[in-house]
Each structure stands twice: as structure tokens, then as C-alpha cells.
Amino acid sequence: MMRSLYSGVSGLQNHQTRMDVIGNNISNVNTTGFKRGRVNFQDMISQQLAGAAKPTEELGGVNPKDVGLGMTIATIEQVFTQGNLQSTGVSTDVAIQGNGFFIVKDGEESFYTRNGVFGLDRDGTLVNPANGMRVQGWMARDLNGEQIVQTAATPTDLVIPVGSKDPARETSNVLFACNLNKNTPEIIEGASEADIAKGTWGTEQKIYDSFGNEHLLSVSFRRVPGNPNAWQATVNVDEGNADFTQTRIGLGTTDGVQNTFIVEFDNMGTLRSVTDSSGNVSNTEGEIVLQASYTVPEAEADENGNPTRHTFNINLGTIGSMKNTITQSASKSTTKAYSQDGYTLGYLDNFKIDSTGTITGVYSNGTNRVIGQIAMATFANDRGLEKAGDNTYVETNNSGQANIGESGVAGKGTLLAGALEMSNVDLSEQMTDMIVTQRGFQSNAKTIQTADTLLETVLSLKR
Image (cartoon, rainbow, N blue to C red; front, side):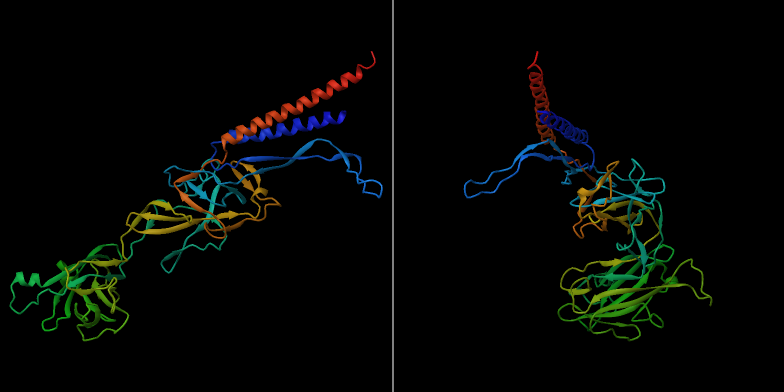
């Protein structure tokens, strides 16, 4: 009779624990990145009143007789189902869609979290503003003028250099992709200014010197008399100051050449060849690249007293191609320099985070630079992680070591900036569990009351 008392006690205690977990779930229904807990029960050891007996020739087998001694908690585990994503519009907020955790550090101790409420401290370090833990990732490094992120390296603090300078870069390459109208009239000797204007087509592109000063690259085209598929191009940097800039253009060199060249097309209107003013002829396949140079204003002279000249390439495109290449077609001429790679001095104005966690800086000069990338961690058994408070977890012996890498790789989820992952607590489910838990608690209490009544009856047998 006493067994039922202790069974009821175990039921009371463990249903109370389950109620504690449900209460914690409900209290965190609006906690960012919170994962609900779940309690699983199992029965305790049973007392055997009689063992099993195998069948004999005279009798059949007999089953064992066991009396259970109550119940206990099997597991209290975290349920890492996906929470809903909520847009916040804050650029430093990041949500995880799928598996994985952010890595944050307090000193040398690593923690893992699904809470993507991040911000910058006074030093520009990306942190959790609630506790100052530093978000881990990889900073980009410069490799031959390109920002490279090495995700195989050990993660480190992410620092956003707000207000930092992006040095001016002189133009090295200009790509042309204009079309020249096949029906443009030739300019004959003695033509009027109006006829010259009709027979000339010009393109312009801003370029930059090493100081970040802006210059205007002008290229004008006119039909070559007697050759229906040839055009003469005249190149000038700052045409209004052409006597000083002394623009030169040639194939492979600008020494001893002028600022003109002849471009020829085939009968399909695609680029065929280029001849510079010294008679040098371009290759017959691949890209045609001309070298141009000009005198840079207000620059120091070289050691020989000669004015400083800046050299850059003009790429006319690929021979035989119509894509991103100068062409000759019977349609309106177009003014288009496809791109140039120079820019003036700029300051970091803003930054954005993409789905891979890559942080890209946006500078006032119009350039974008990769600053770094947010790291993610996954575990073989994420339910084996131990809660450490502040919405964080730490490794345990049963979680396995963190598998650190970039998002979208090796089972890691993707990132969404400007959003947060909500708690995965379902209130309707928790309320239902609360009712079931309450009924279980009450039933176990009734078991104790009933056992007590039975004991009282036994005690009252003798008056």
C-alpha cells in the first residue's frame, strides 16, 4: 500500500518539473531565437512479485508480476525547430534560416546562439549589444587589389571600419561597347561644319588620376574615305586642355605615336582589327587592347624633369563578337563606355549583409568592398548543448565539437539580414500541455489522498 504513496509523490514532483519547463517556454514566447524545452517521462524500476515461468507438459507459461514504483524524467531537451522570421528593417539584425548557430565570444570562451540581435560598439566591433559578446567571423584581406575572405582560417572578431577611407585609384582599364552607325556619311575635303558634325560620332567617359581627380576621356569617330568598314578614332583626355595633356594612344606603347588610330570591321559589323598612327596592326583574334597615356596636371615631374604621365588601357572588345564590343551596324550610333575601374577618395558610409553572411562596405565614392563574413557553427547533436543564459549555449561532451564554416555549406542554413528569428514556442500547444500536466498532477495528488484513506481504514480496524 505504501508503494502507491511514493508513486504518487514521484508523479507530483516530475509533473511539477514539467510545469516549470512549460512556464519557462511561455515566459519566453517573445524571446528572439528561443528554443522551447520538452519534458519526456519514463517509468521507474518495478518490483517483481513473481517471475515468469515457461510452459511445461502439464501447464502453460506464466507471465511475470511486476508492480511499478513510479515515474521519473527521461529527458529535458531543447527542440530546435525553425522559428518564424520577422522583418525588422535594422541592417545589423540577422536571422538564420535552417541549421546552425552564430558564434559569439566573451574573452576566449566561445558561446553559440540563434539570437541575431547585433550592433556596433564604439570601436566598430560587431557585438550583441545586450551583453557585449563579440560576433565571430573572418575579416577580408587584400590580395592583389581584391578583398578575399579565407573561411578556412580561425574566426576572429568582426570590425566594421565605419568612416574609414577608401583611397583614390587611378583608372587602369576602360572598356568600350559603343555602336557606330554604318550609314554615317563620309567627311569629304572642304565639308562644312554641319556636315563634319553629321559625319562624326563621339563617346565620353570619366576617368581618374592617382590623386582621384576626375578627367574626361573623349573618343570621336569619323568614317575613313574610300573604306566602307573603317573609322578613324581621335582620343583626348580633357579635350579643352589637350595641348597640355598631350594624349597618345597606340598598340603596346604610346612612344612615338599620336592620339589617333584606325578601327576596321568585317561585313558582319564585328570588330576585325586596329592600326595605330605608327602603322602597328593588332592581333587577328581575341581582345584588342590599346594603350593610352596623358600628362597629369599638377603632378611632380620625374627625376629627369619630365612631366608625369598616366598610362591606362582602352579595351575595344573581342574580335568577331557582338557582346560588350565596339560594333558597326546600320542602326543609331550609341555613346557607351562599358566600364572603367578608377575612382576618387571615399569614406565608408554604410554596410550590408547578404545571405552568405558576407559584409560588404558601401563607400561614398560608389565602390563596394568586402569587409568580412559571419561564421556559423553546427553540431552533430545540437540537443546535447548546454544552456548558458543570455540566449546562448556551450559545448558539452555529448554535443560534439563545433563544425565552423560559412552559411549554406555542409548543412548550415542561410542568413537573412534585417530580420530576426522569433521564438518557436507555440502558445496553443503549451496551453494544451499545461492542461495535461495539471490533470496529471491532480491525479497523482488523488493517488496519495486515496492511499492515505486506505491507510486510515487499516488503522481504524482496531478501535
